[in-house]
Image (cartoon, one colour):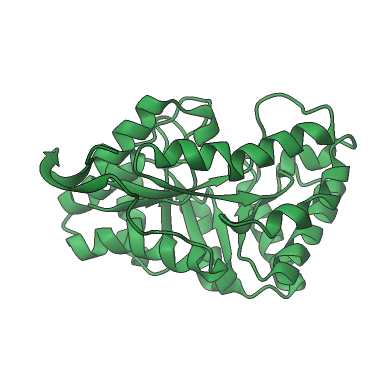
Length: 287
């Protein structure tokens, strides 16, 4: 099983997580810029954070055989803080960097006028920089927020096939499926989606434009939820090709629209016959 985790916040994870992810088959990931849990007080803190995403975290992942990519944006929650708005002027510099494969996370938190403005403006940056967009749907009033999200996407002129609408659930998947956008699902221990609910959605809607992620961060989450979803799919009768499509080919197709994905094997990580829970894995070959 090869895995591309298309949404995981490794800044908040440990090296043990990287090792476990590699053993489970994770070979590439995307780390979206996000809210760190407490308010940032200046634009300089964003600069340091963005620099770490395109530099240090990319290097750290490589030490464990995983290709690291990121998305850059002003997160919806921080769009409401006037101290953060100046970061919008910095974004073009970072959106031109290697390893930045989309504008994101953008979208809604509380669906305020400030979020409307910042969301629309960052979708325009995606158009101007010829990048896909990763969109965050709100935790509250999710269906109304998803409808509003799709309205803003339509107004932006960004093609639906270049938009991934994330954190979906059963009430919101149909409207996104009909829009032509990609559908993202975060698999969590207690909230959002779980593996069996995800399998049920895949049975109903198929595997096209479906993206499964762990969205693991500093809260209670699990960086192996992509792997566990793959096992649940196999247990439910999906084929290995189906699993490969959802966990690898789909995220590669979506983020590949940036022309910045790097997926070749890292030096020092050679094939091995060792297995992890019955699945062939790659092991470090003595870097």
